[in-house]
Length: 309
Image (cartoon, rainbow, N blue to C red; front, top):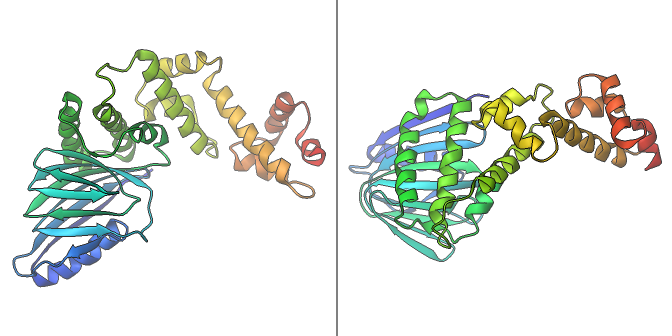
């Protein structure tokens, strides 16, 4: 896994034209919505991005940007206003934001951001498909400006720190650090209760997230408990304990998920299936091992299973 970096710093009339192109490209078709004068125009942008996480530090002269309905994307956004005043409108909800305010927004839906004066923002964008459990929890509440709670203040500090330190992180650390920020965002939005989540709730959410990560990486033949523990910031012992609570070992769960995907492909096959290719596609390095595991799971060999269905 690698991390990419984009840096842009522009000024003046020519810089404005470059800026228009850059924000359109880097933020998936975001457009300048309010004309700004090229004279005295300044803006700068730094983006650090891994496969499921992106941080941005963006600053500039007064302007307004719009994400149109036709734009594509599937990111969820957490933004801190570092400097200036900003107005966010999305889905009929208007959030008036000042310095240190935090706002949650859906970067896959239309919105308008209006910066009435020079501004600076720190942003975290996460892939909603890869981070589905956390995003689903956040979206149980209306999005917009976070209430002024202790959790929101902690989130504001952590977000700005993450954006500042992003250049020093490798891709794995970068993605791991994003997890507690999304969890804090959920805690900040929960207006229904002031109670802290219980240990069992935290464990259940973590188990759900790790299972989702496993399902997304089944094709990787090197998927192993050590890598999973490192990616999710837990000890190897705790990872095994988490799965034992559900009557499984980590690799039993991995194998069962791989076998389920193989069975699904075999069931959909027309004619004689290429069993070896299907097994390899879902992370089985050895054909004989796959066939034994499949028979133990389904009571029949893969070829007979395909012909039966």
